[in-house]
Length: 191
Image (cartoon, rainbow, N blue to C red):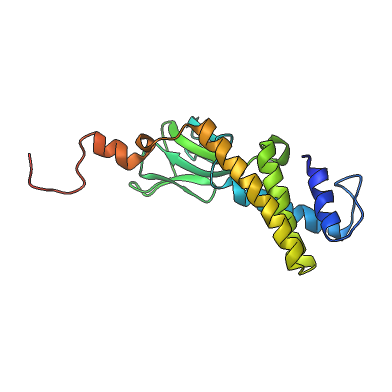
């Protein structure tokens, strides 16, 4: 589903005529796009198989800062004392934003543009945004519930695809990796 098609679905949900372009200067088009973008960003923050990058290397700029692009929602560096603060990487152990070496990010969640999202996520975003849009504009709970039901079906399909593509297992968890590596979280007095 294209973004124009999704916006037109939202407009139709409140009884408005469809538009031929996303650039039309109509207040309902702007409100529909805003709702759609809010939902698009919110849903992707979780991280899905198609918007998570692994083992990404960041190089410090000429003053030693590592800027995180605005389309990156979250980063998990290999070094646990490195965190994302605002749009920069920060070293909590040394209390500095300055890095001298490259930093490897084990995982990062990227907020994709509409066209780059998986089609099932586009469907979910469109239906869920339509439910929110109807609630905000019409306060029609029956229509809202109908769109929520369609969004629920799309979410089930999306989660099924995520489980299939992600091939997740319990051993991918950081706590399990530490436990299997022989690191004891507590001194239990055993050898």
